[in-house]
Image (tube, rainbow, N blue to C red; front, side, top):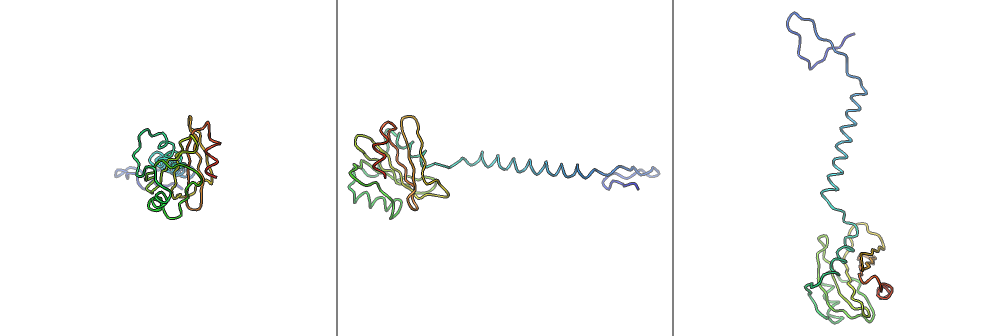
Length: 180
C-alpha cells in the first residue's frame, strides 16, 4: 500500500502521483520533545535573567547601610519611648527591638522589597552596630550569617519579623551577645 502526502502539490495532469514514504513516528516524537525542552529551558533562563535572586536581601541591604558614610536619619539619639513609637509606625506593633544597656544613636525607615523596614544604629560598647528589622516575606531560613570583608552580619527570625545585626567581624562575640 502506498501513501500520498496530503500537503504535496498534485501531479500535473497526465503524470502519475508522487508517492512518498510516511515520516517515521520516532522522528515526530523527537522533534516535539526537542521543541518542548527548548521552550522550557529558554523560559527558565529568561526568568533567572529578568528577576534577580532575592534570598538574604535583608542581609545585603543591612551590610550596605552599615557601610554608608553619611546616611540621612529620621531620628537622632532617640529615647527608648520615642524609638518604640517610631518603630510601631514604621514596621508594626510587635517589632522586636534590642534590649539592654545599648546606646541608640540614630534610626531611619527603609523600603526593602516593597516593604517597610526600620534601620537602627546603636553602640554596643565601642562598636557601631546596625540593626534592621522588617516583616519577613516568603520562606526564609531561621538563622543565617555572612562575613563580608571586615563586617559580620547575622539574621534571625522572631515571629513574623526578620532581624539583622551588622557589626565589626573582629569583635563579633561582644556585640552578638546583645542580640540574644
